[in-house]
Image 1 (tube, one colour):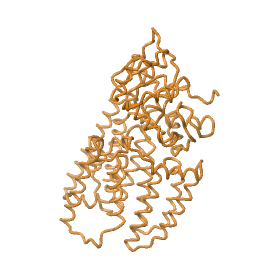
Image 2 (tube, one colour):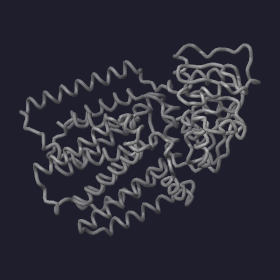
Image 3 (tube, one colour):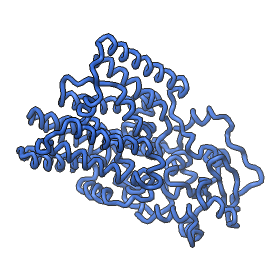
Image 4 (cartoon, one colour):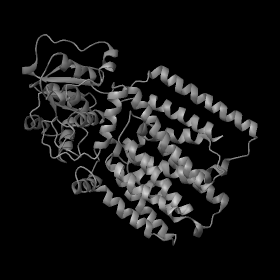
Length: 498
């Protein structure tokens, strides 16, 4: 009854896509790049949105930008949500194909998938993210490599450089594909199997990476990005950091459950250590280390363990269920997921929302035609720029590794935390407007600064203006919530009028 399993899985993923429908922090920056290309036929190689120093824009996500803009401009929110569902369904479909490669008689049970997907749902489902492509291609490569390893279909290896041509222009996470190939070389070498074919595939993949708008500079950028310190970026924090423990409870539970199941398997089946597949062990071990090192890398461990260990762990607990009872169970689970999907449609209205952004503050500036340079949190930057350009420029946005000097994000941290000398940065980088999250120390400190005046505030944010910009009578922001939903993708950035 695999067809019912896949239908149930699709409904679950569709419901999750609607449940997590907040717009990703960098999505508006992606729309700007996509719109620029479709209107001018060229890619941005500079940043026109910031008043701080920038350098040449090497965009490792330019291909994703084109896809996202095409979907949003032609199909709206529904197109984005359905595309997100499809790409993750494809990812988990390939995982089931790996499971069936290891055991063609494996029973696909939806409950383990539901529980495991929930551990990383917040990383997967926020609108649509560029790393969605990396997750899909990583699992595709894993499937191809397992097909070659288990069934000796060496000719399938051509798929890797062919897809690298696409992957390399969609997201810098293509480096994980190179890493996966290297792990297979090491694992198969330890398994005393021929590795020449993997070496040749690796060479062709590296050569294919050169086919991009930036040539060799792109490879240099990928290397620098891989070695860039990201301790100030929340999703790059270690899992066992203070922030990680708070935000990754489900993953930590999964991690310890996996270790417990691993020990239980060893005790029950007592496998011969000499017969352990080294490739499988290395992939699981390295993705485990990666996931602990960084929250953002958790999905790689989830995908690897689900693909490689489903059969091993399932047989610890599986019991033969009468065929009729098993069918009833599958139909019951299908109905639950159908109701989940329907309720998600009803409550979320097939819409992406931007409530986590400073929508009221931005609308206030727009309604009153207030011009000037804006300091805001970097993850709000692309939204603010998208909505307020050309009247306003921003301090920085989420393209911190692609556009800005490395020290700028530390300057922003010093400002937010009001560290000694923070006031000088408002003059070094001439700032007229501040949209401040109330959680930061600067929210209280800036109220004592005679240069700025608190002009309006919402539950999460506060808007400060230089006193020379303050007027007696300002128009209030629009009160109707529906307005912000309908206008969230409106922008004055339009190259067709230049």
